[in-house]
Image (cartoon, rainbow, N blue to C red; front, side, top):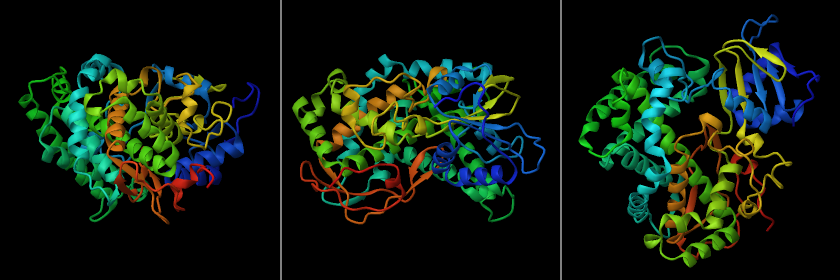
Length: 468
């Protein structure tokens, strides 16, 4: 999907650029698909509604070669953040937006140096038994024979993983309190009205963002100060021990890391269970693989990692419904790409979602085919659900292990089925989310509905279901 060096780059200007920007703010996934299908893998957007552009442009770049160029250019680019609403200089909102994702240079190096050792493979493997205990305790309370919001249950489990194992917080009430506050703050940041109309008036969405930012910063700072209660090394104490980091900056890093540590895991688990409900043959085959391996309670990590279909289901879910469908970067030092020299503050967008759906890389890209992973080995820029290069998510091993334990625990206890006329819509809030939950029926393992029920909603625009 690369253009020849001498080919002109399609450029959107004026009203066309404004329309594209508004459409992207409302529905970025569909907008990216529509424009790249029509204009190609490189699109320039002049970010001004006047005829003479005064703002550095935005470039949309699609394909493995561009993914590699962008992700390796750490001296020239920094990622954009997960919370888009701007705040006044010195405000809690302004501080919270500057998480470890958006920092560069010395601050990013200090944070990475403090946290990365806690996410290395030996440490993650050491947490395996604790992760299993959490999964058993959480899933044991799920009601068999009931219709449940699997999105809510998955988020509760992922939060408990993250707060207990990574942050050393074993008080379940405190986990839920911080998780709920983070979720509210995150959702208000992705309100279209708050982003488009940052007007600080009573009752406005923007005022609500600022109020929640003040509260979240205060709660996280107090929580960070209490990290000494845990003797085991954890992310809270590691961030707090970084020299020169103020309590406010420590709170921003902790809030951003907490959100990243469970939100992508929760949504991936939700989509995996929904996809398995939509593909009962795959669900039955995965359960057979798990049962043949023996009880999860006695299964060690090496044997769990070696289960090919379990691994394939997780990889295929991450490919088909990529948690972070596009990645934004800002230019911090003049840089050249696609035969364009970009000045400071130009915006670049690459898309794991679109890369994962390139037919030249993935046969039948809209189909859920976990078995494809027995025969393909895409490189780090063809398959990048956790980003790639030096900016790859440091918690990817932790997330993968947690997903495997969760799926194994759930599917050896329950079957998951989708009921007729269930509506499932997707939205975007830095990640691909379920707009109003995902209602599935939990049955005793092996007794799920055999046929896929007709269902409705924008989620199903992303996939091709198996023929009846």
